[in-house]
Image 1 (cartoon, rainbow, N blue to C red):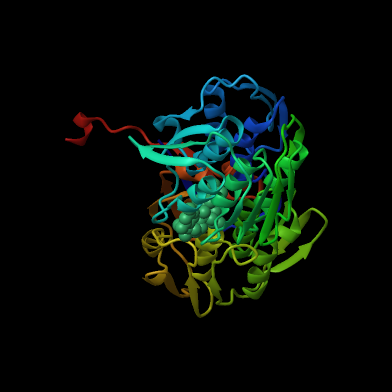
Image 2: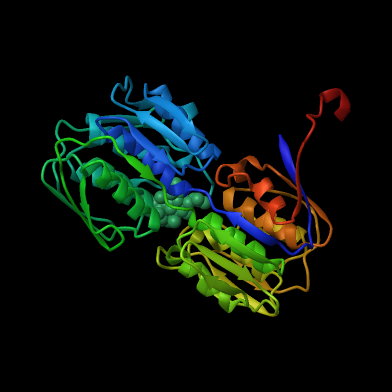
Length: 427
Ligand code: EPZ
């Protein structure tokens, strides 16, 4: 197992290019199952969650060809299995998209209970509600979720909770169902729109993505296509926070500034100066960091995936901030690690009260999940001294070339191997 060794205190300077969006990629890859021919997917981020999705497709019999470092050709015409076994599914949460995609194409799917970040209970009742409305039956047996339908027929689905996963899964299952499906109270994140655009490029008829209601007219057949994934809003936001907390000046390239608006608005109030260009934003800070109140909400609210990163920024604000987590029950597990770095944070349920301190100090810490890990990296970049971050596998699920990109901005970060301790050495 490797760790990151980071010596903080250097303002980040220069340019960084943002990769394709993880949460779009992990839905678009299973969605290739719906195509009646080869798909070329461009701007895929080179991260372990994408590798895990590709591995699943390959195991099912898809022909996968790498055209360049970020482009794959995927041909799912000769799939031999409709099952995603435990060892593959547990690697990532998004394996649940294979349920919707396989159901949509073959009328049957069997996927082991998904893994992924531990952010509290992560039910999939809304996914199953949509499948059932379309005519499928579901059952959980031996840790596997099985869904099956003789015929999928369009229907009206009103989601009880705004869910990214359920919205996408319902779209995947409905694009080839007979007749019209109307999905209400859906998620509106940029990756929902990206998946809908991908499905339409394959010949689907999906309208309204990005609003509260999505209407899908089922089509008989879909075809292969070439599609380029949108840039990752959260990766971009992470570098924007890193530039702000270190008092740097960074041009964050290959972004869609509109997708960053909820993040930009809060960072500006915290004291960052942000200039927007067509496909880039420049972030710098010269003054103090101001305290903020933040509540995470579904898009276009402030994204929960940025909550740990923003909290790190607020640990060194001049005053008291209140951060309320509106999506997940348990997304403050990283706070104990930040306290080891000198932060002053009190958590009560879904609310964190952060008293700004003059500076953070380096410490050995552990990534508890993907964004928590990224937040610790940002904390270490700002802290006095040398920090070591363990369990970086979580971080590599979602950040391509993190070390190289940060080194390119002048950060002092290295990835080093932790030698395995033998029993004899431990005694
Ligand atoms: C997606 O998770 C993202 N993951 C998460 O990103 C992100 O935090 C989350 O959306 C919210 O934006 C992927 O896209 C792979 P949800 P998802 O269904 O789809 C409740 C990251 O760091 N709910 O929108 O699993 C649920 O408990 C990751 O990149 C139900 O009650 O999230 C939560 O409170 C972590 N029943 C809320 O809805 C359901 O059937 C939102 O969850 C489904 C969800």
